[in-house]
Length: 481
Image 1: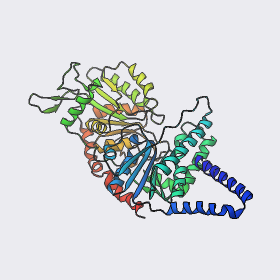
Image 2: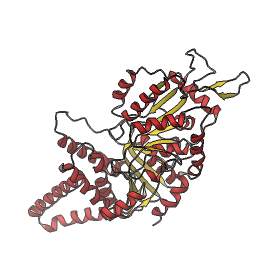
Image 3: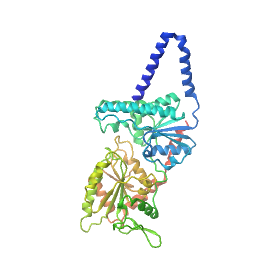
Image 4: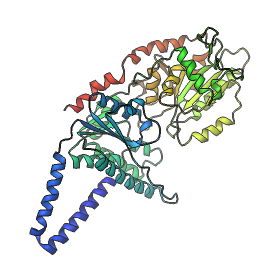
């Protein structure tokens, strides 16, 4: 909406100016000016774009893996890529080290007074981001043949992207990760006018696109039935950095992490450079796993409203009580919760109040290189992502599966397109089911891992199909039409 308002305000100003000049000077006097402006716009649209693609995400580039993978794949195919988004987390090395990829960072939106009504805050933020996007896309970047934009967020991204493509004669491509209006619906009532407008807006600008990608077959069908938008399903697939990790590499990772996160260090509490909570270096230099090591559970969260971390925290409380019983076969458990987000400090406060004896929780923030290694070194993953639309899939599970890591994931409508219950992981509906699943899978660990091993074996076929192959089959054809 902001883009449309800005566009028509500018158009109105131009028309008023033109009319005033015409009335003052006459039509013949202003006609050369009008023809010159029209000629410049036509030449601008028809100027060759070359083999160049602009990839746009209105978010932290470093925390937008799928768009980074798009950029890397495009660069491999010989495209010059302008990757536009916010700075923040360190991007993938494949982005940083590629001469065909240029990053263009958007300035952060100005801070508006908290006393402003939420509706007015939305409008001001959308207007400021519209101006910033127009400045970067029209001035800082060269004309691309294609503009590939991530959705959501939809406002103001879709309108601005469409307007830029209109002005530049560029093909407008959308990669649908979810629906923006369903995420907005987490904070607004179903009858809120802003929510109704957001849904209309998303569908309107979606139909103006030249091509569309989406993340599930369920979303592909929904786009077609809801708005008549034809999309190609491009499932998230892990790149090769997400893989199983050998014991030696696990040991190196834990040795690096234990200086900042003591839970990864020796269980004795004594400083030991050759021992971690899970591995030890023998006198001959060989690395082995400790026989009575704890289990390592990992979960990645954005610490937002669509991921209820209390479900895992309550399940761990049940695990603690069960592990405290005499004769229990449950191992001690180290739980690493990675990620950044608005509710992280709140839950860190709750965690600090726990007096667990058999469960330890840490909340590390890892580099893009160490995160896959932690997944590949873990014994079990937990996913709390609950889709706002019921039509997208959690990329964190894709990453875990790429590392051969079995997962317990909370149920939602299309999760079965990724997690096959009792085949490559387990699906739960509440904290009671999650608590039981964790205990069933880890009973007798590390000596007994029958079910975990079955899941790992079944994940080998998933691990064999990677991002590059899927991208060439599904995305590259859109750039040749």
